[in-house]
Length: 351
Image: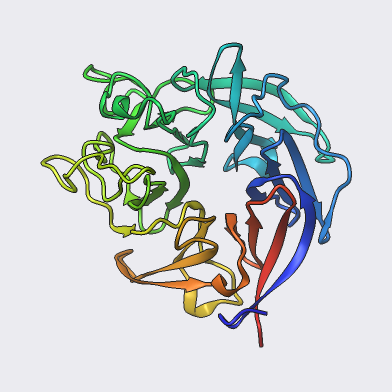
């Protein structure tokens, strides 16, 4: 029981760094484990055998592993899903995205095909990895700056610190911002640090993304094609050792966050509330907060009918839990912790 008037009901325990969740049409859940496994939760029970068929080149190191997950809009008939992972390339690695078909019994991934690779790097940090499908069927892929390559986030010719847009087969859409030149054809937006939250509000036609700042300066942004979100030329944060990255928090033609956190909360995962048991939160954003000076909670971003931010509310912070992902379905609200011994909880009103 939390002081927030909520209770957490364990649905599945002993997950190794759960990272992303998706609801299947039958109400069961798929959950990625960063340690390189895809798991299913059915009838409030973790299915013992992991889903088989994942690629063998998943890099499980640092912040790398099996990452994001999203279903194709026609999943009910096609059984198609997409997942992201850190790809082991020997001395280098990258963020990769694959398309696969989930078997009818949900035990195996079939026809697994890599459809996208981000920028190649030599670090095991800041992979991004969240996925979402736009109204036109194209896929948005969030990418980190690789930590060491932060200055390249201001270079639209590569995909460090970027967000990409592709078709489900990996082709590049002709209407991407830089297909005619001036940047990488896959680029949708740039100037990001490490985007680990993504949600498309189809009703209000908004693409929400949040990203980790350094020490301070976590950001919630509205994505626009071709836009520059400033990292590291502008930031509200500083280096972990206390040194200054830049004295600028704004610059011409660089986007400002719609909400920011100083000190940091280490945001990860994001959902839009549609669960019937939470009528006062309908169409608000929920964001997991893993750690940092102000983390270990879930943040509700209060949105008005037009999708403008009206305020925020911290939830569950008295429990001392960090949350990697959150998921709202018609019937339930779920949260996954960010631990090696991770748990997926169902969040319920206390009364």
